[in-house]
Length: 337
Image 1 (spheres, rainbow, N blue to C red):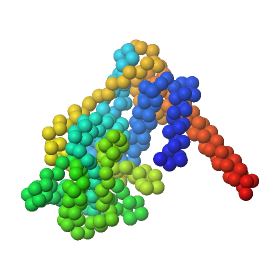
Image 2 (image 1 turned 45 degrees about the vertical axis):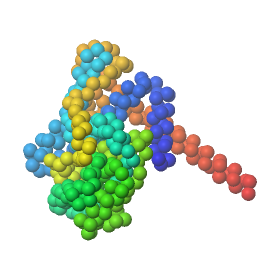
Image 3 (image 1 turned 30 degrees about the horizontal axis):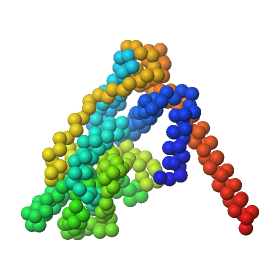
């Protein structure tokens, strides 16, 4: 974790203690939900601006309504979910569902390995066919290992696409959680045999600490990172190219014994208990400018903007404190020379 990320985590922890409007963990959870809702809408606008066909625009606009209306019944709040790949909040829910559904069955396979298989980058016009070629290639490898070597692969794979801004190219690649080290290397070898232009240095195999959720979350968390290595957000055109190439494709695929695992059911609505608002029957509507849900009296549910302002003040204070500590440390070392 970087120093900046450390500061952010620290500031959020401190915020829960010091903020005069923080109501506990459920309030913090709703606050982050509001931030995801706002960022998704900002992303949607760039995608819709880049798309010409009305029928395609329509499917993106459908995500605008995800959690846009919250129905309050006492302390219980309910909002519908769009379950689209470009919705940040629904992707987070999908990650939790997949991790909870597959962590235990994967652990039962024994020693696990996180395998990454790649091919050279391609231009936008080649992306869809490249994804299809990779999926078919993996199927051939599974069949070859089973028929020729008597090896039945067990695990789960995910396809991910990233974007290289400098070269204006796309990088579709596979991530696997694969059982048995020998099987993982056999998978890699046949991948390199099948795709002669794949660079062995771009492939990766590493053991998984099965007691740590991070490896499972890494596999399930997204189909594209949506930002460049420098942290710049992908343009709407780039995002649309990626989502279009993945449309109709299975982002996740279990194979071997994991095929017997029942796929976690996708929730179509989300319920939350919110205890810092007076229990009543009401409807809360999303306001993108305020990054919050408002009732008919314009009461804010989360007070997101206030929350963000407090977070920035705390983060600034932590940075100044860190700077002062480092400065005093350097000064102390200099005086001791």
